[in-house]
Length: 388
Image (tube, rainbow, N blue to C red):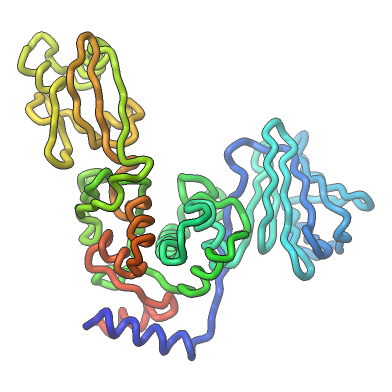
């Protein structure tokens, strides 16, 4: 009943509420330190602000080479030199986007909506893209999902990415921005160029996911769950009522459904002895850690003493997942694994298969997140007041 009310109220509020599209400050191009970049316009002139004050415009055929050297920030165009104390910011004066090209050993060129602010962070440049949240969401969905995934899947990713961004809006405040553009937050490579993604973001504008207490959820996702998702507390120690294990047969024929790795038996036992003090002279203990065949997801290797947490093994051994069997093969042990990622929340490949099968994004959402609701971002306070 609540879900029906939420949907009705969302449709009503979307028609009468003023849209307050906030910007997100995204730390960009942080995979490698940058000491100089080239900033251009893709269409219209660039408006330049130096230390927060408008310093003029550059023609669409001009651009800025921004660099840091000897602790000083400099910005030069074909016709001007800007003296910068703290930061320089650029945005287009009309249509088009801002193009940023790195000039170091790794060459990256990306287009961004909104503005680009450049400041100094030690001996490197700090680049921040201030972008309206809906355009940021579109860029994330394109970067995370790629092409040819279908409208319903893009809608699902849109509400998940938007919810994640707002929930984690303070994640990088000490660094001078809200979120980064890498896997630490959400992958973001600039402006969205896929029409279907833009349609999905527009169709779900301002929609976020909340739990039974009308709190924004942690919209976690992973590549492939291997047929069964995990409880949040089995991975991160803290339970969440909406992040509970669910069976998923849709992802089992997807590219990341299985993995395989072989390791010398001696290397495996040495790791367990060094890390967990496993008695490798005890026949029963060795058998437990070399012959492991769980019927479902497990937190530990059954029968092993002391306890050996599979999630830690996954991290240490760089396995694709913590869902695997172990069996001996001569002087080796073989790991046959299922899934890719931590296994909590949304299984991306499973959700893609559901969308291709014709399931609406709302049904897919409720399969992976228990007892959650879709609400308009601007109505959260209303629902919270009603629940008091």
